[in-house]
Length: 107
Image 1 (cartoon, helix red, strand yellow):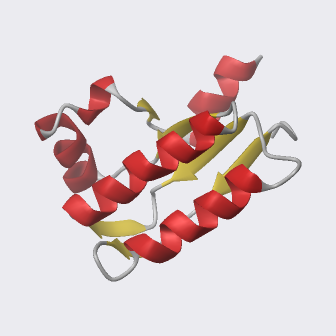
Image 2 (spheres, helix red, strand yellow):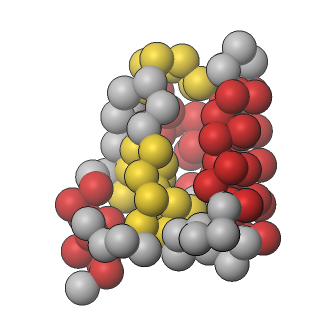
Image 3 (cartoon, helix red, strand yellow):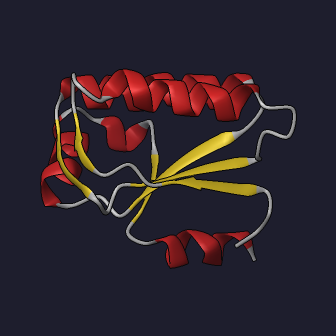
């Protein structure tokens, strides 16, 4: 894994009860003096995501872009992938099935 990539792996539910903490983590990364070129959000441990979780991801994307970085997503389960597709967020986010597939794009 390149040192210009920071990986965060939320787990459980990404919903109204956890979205604020997720946004705080991302903001801390975005505002760090050594903010990464890429923030990779690995969702493989997310069992459920609702509109609040989706909003947290959009907020994270804005924060990372404001720090001249890029955010990518990988490991979304079927429910999360369906949420992305139903809301057309597949046009907004760069989504990879696995971390390895994202890493292959860095070569």
